[in-house]
Length: 243
Image (cartoon, rainbow, N blue to C red; front, top):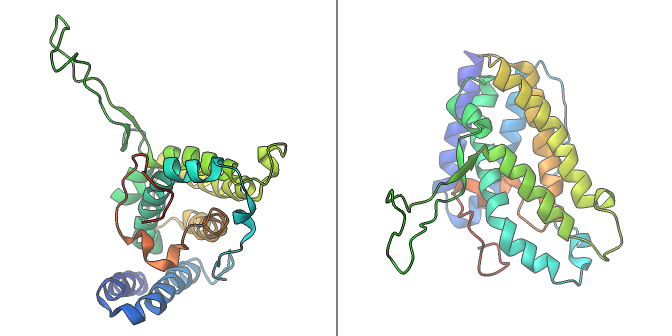
């Protein structure tokens, strides 16, 4: 009964955030994230596994003066934001501890996401292949694997000089800390999905806090901003703007 109440409240708060007047949007999003953290913490027996402090723009990531930053934003902002969107879709199931849920399994499914769309191989509109197969083959992988690649590549661009090793960058450190928690969660939910997985709840909540640290460093909105309620194009963008 308690778990069902948590889930119904989480879904209700999500609906409110999408339909409330503009001036109330920010406070509702903060409340939604706070509920998600509280619900998971309560479900695992009151064990607090992460900080609930909101992330704000630090300014540290804006110190770079190299063109690699705007280029990286155009290349990876869409992929990172879509990954965060699908990561947050796991929230209601994680509140219940249900790692058998579709959104949880789909996030880690090695065939779950189209990474590179199939391209036609015809010449001037004419297929010259004998078998007539000019459509090409798409490349698929899990959304989580694409999230790791795009987060690392985006974070690696946020540097103030070209001599600092990637592993010493705050952005890369945050990304790798996130990967550590999620890699462990992946092993749990892929090998032995459960209807009440307390360990996975803890990993998700800790990863959520680290993810907000990373998003702050790469100049993206926090998870409680409402920015990730929609889907994003993963194609290379024309500008480095968020929208």
